[in-house]
Amino acid sequence: MEEGREEGNSRRERPWNDEELEKIPKKELLKWLQQNANNSFLQQHSTDNKSLLIKAFNTLFARNDYWRGEQDEQELFRYHNTECPSLTTLVLRYLSKNIRAFLQELIEKLPEVLRSPSS
Picture 1 (cartoon, helix red, strand yellow):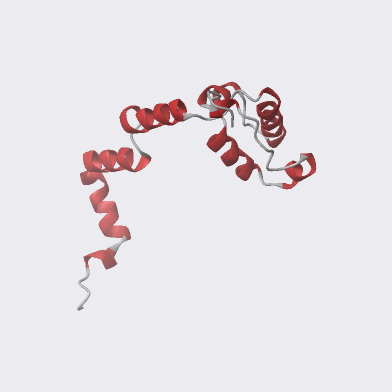
Picture 2 (cartoon, helix red, strand yellow; picture 1 turned 45 degrees about the vertical axis):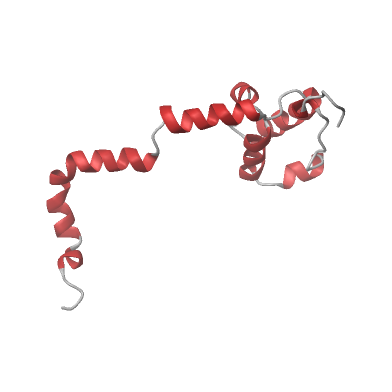
């Protein structure tokens, strides 16, 4: 790489050709885009169906200026750690506030939990 040239603007090699793109699962293509495209690009492109993902993939290589960089990782880190509690955290908060409402139903549906292992 040339000195002074940003890594985000360097030419990248396509991991799949057009024929291979048609064959790979949508989930794999989406994961690849999330790992390689910057946040701005991901916000601009719809991921509703595979044809739109393929179009986004081709646009990423054609434009060559939307590669994921350190700033995108920092934004993602800030988002995950400050603005968006995990689903597990949200579920546990809800359950802790409403445990009494669920207690009787849990006792009825899971009687084996009340039995000791030595019984």
